[in-house]
Amino acid sequence: MKITVLIVVLVLILGGAYYFTQAPKSEEATSTSTEFVLRVSGKALVDGPEVMTVKKGTMVTIRVTADEAEEFHVHGYDRSVDLEPNVEASLTFLADTAGRFHTELEGSKTEIATLEVLP
Amino acid sequence: MKFFRNSLPIAAVVALAGLPLAANAHAFGQQYSLPLPVTFYVLGGVAAFIVSCALLVFAGPERSIESARTTAIPKRIWNPLVVAIELVLGGALGIGIMLGLFGNQSASENVFPYLFWIGLVLIVPYVSMLVSGIWELGNPFKIIVDNVQPESQPGKRPWKHGYLPALIGYVLLIVLELFFPVFGTTPRVLAIIVLLYIAYLNIGSIRYGTKVWFEHAEFFSVFFALAGKLAPVRVGQQSVTTSSPVSRLVNEAPVTLSLLAFILFALAATAFDGFRETETMATLIIDLLKTDWFVTSFIIFLLFPVGFYALYAGALLAMKKLVRGSKSLRDYMLLFAYSLIPIAFAYHFAHYFSLMLNSLGIMISADRVWYVQLAIIVFGHAFAAYISHQVALREFPERGRALLSQLPMLVLMVFYTAFGLWVLSQPFAL
Image 1 (cartoon, each protein chain N blue to C red):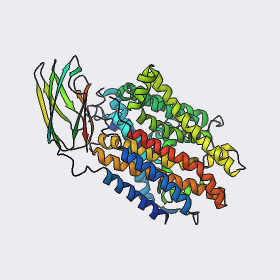
Image 2: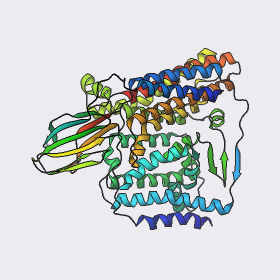
Image 3: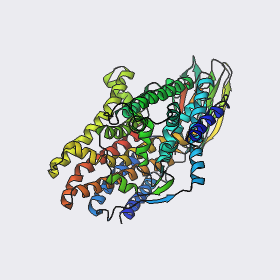
């Protein structure tokens, strides 16, 4: 009896959580691709969003320009692109896993911006 | 046989440690979770409350103390099993220290910080929650101490310090992790810290005796033993024993407040680790208090366990007053102490399991993390409430008195659970 009560309650919680977190059907269609432009100077983000937010399933393009040779790395997705001084580089990938992912200049281990992929 | 058995793991560690000095490792320490949505937080809090009330109304006393079932293991299987456990744990420590001292000094390129913070601090306790006794069989620190001191010494001084050294060790470990992460992740520094810890264990063993020192002062042994109280399976003494964690948590209790403080620190430290990265913390220190970040966050870190302890003491005092209990407050605090273990380890797991998986190269989507966090925390709460209720039924045979005694515990546990969920739901600071 005790175990049954606990299991029923747990199922109700998870079911309720699943139901209430589903997006309503009438919601307008979300964009399937999004682009962000970042400019880095002196190992700091000088232009562009500190937090890049997209929905899961979005094709993300991040265009980065830095004032020095570096490697721009997106943690979690483990995607990176080499940067030449003052030459824009582009990184495109499908954001298919929800979460909060830091991006950094790999050479100097400097955090630049955060990518938030919402479910 | 004893000499051979004691020496073999050391020899293997020395041999293996000389191997992969150039080992590369994937970056560790990355957690990709998102704040828990408000829906989850509210659902979790409500569920915790409902489950607690349901247990009070429906749960009766355990019909009988469940007896453990022990299966003897033949020597031809047991001896190689123990050696294998010693080799795995000892080898990991030995290789880790060597890599730490002489390998690549980048945390993301050296496997030692991974072995320590993920392997030892996360994976071993989680395994201990399922199968306890493995650490006791293959504790690499004890193997080293046993080899440095040929026979376990009975000790020159009586033990009067409870679990205070283990608690201090736990506090220092968390301080290293949260406030000096550069030291905690620089491989050579971490290796030196571990070597100093081994020296400390040797000195203490000489002074107080190996058995007493490792039971009360070796932080990892104390931590894993507490996790092991949740395990349905135990290995040891050439046997495998299956028993209900319920009967263990109900029938046993710590004898010193220092072990209670250790359990509460586990809960508080995890809660603080989650809280310190939130916008709320940033707003509190930067916008409201306008004080030095490091000093203020350290003070808040110290206040967390004090607050959790004070709340627990307050709840037990309220319980004593409500039922007009004849025992001292200290006795009641110890009696119900083990009912906190499920909440403490459930919250620990909910907070760190995604970090553990990420470090093992397993990417888990943040929404799936939410479901696991919610389920684990509510389950831990339900289990804790059940244990507390069973302890009350044993202590106060009159059902009405037992129910009355549980009202303050219900409030306390719902608060702990709701606070844990609230911390997980807070937005991260930029």
